[in-house]
Length: 250
Image 1 (cartoon, one colour):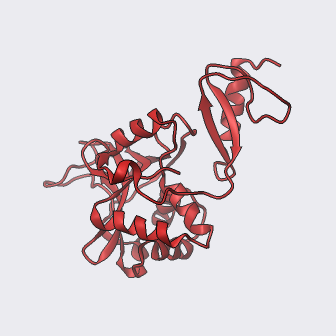
Image 2 (image 1 turned 90 degrees about the horizontal axis):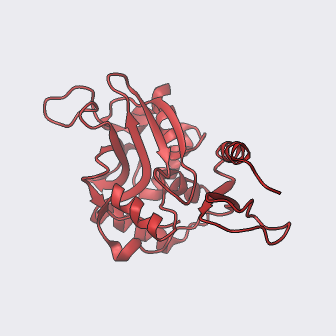
Image 3 (image 1 turned 90 degrees about the vertical axis):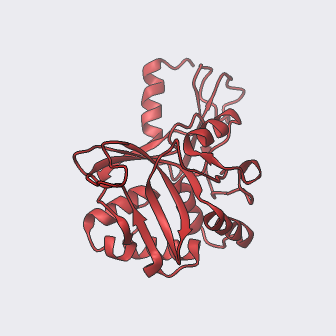
């Protein structure tokens, strides 16, 4: 059986509908050895369906806890043919339950020592508040998943307050690639960080500001997580080419 370019494109679109139940990997070339193979066709861009099952996260940060910006981490994992952690991966891992405490402790060390840089990317659309949040941005190993939402201005805003508004909920749902309600999202962040929900805060860039880089000056940003002060921060305002931190393979 030979798949046409149109066939490949239709399959690709269908696979992107539910990234929670499938992984999509890209290979240079291969063939179908048996009817049970997950490889679809010999093609320059082969799509292989792999049931994701449980999300696994490396126990230690990549490359010996190296410090890289998001752009460099994306290139690093692509070169190694590995998948870089997204905020959606992290959230699904939390929801699985029975968390590996060594991994959880190690993640908290990332938050404490520097930042956890994810493959989640936000492209803002000033002068509006809209933005496109992409899981696995730039990955050659898994199909990126995009969602366009309103991204309110948050400047050290408590997540509990942001979630009182519809736009706050839809933003965090897109940020973590989930349909969970606000209470479940807060529970997951409490478990991840070890902080109270009142200590979990959000940061996004402003449309107008005389001091900080506004959305029109830098439309592309990276999603990173860290401790700050006595709390836990979910950032959507850092440059993917300037702010460095640790990252993980999933």
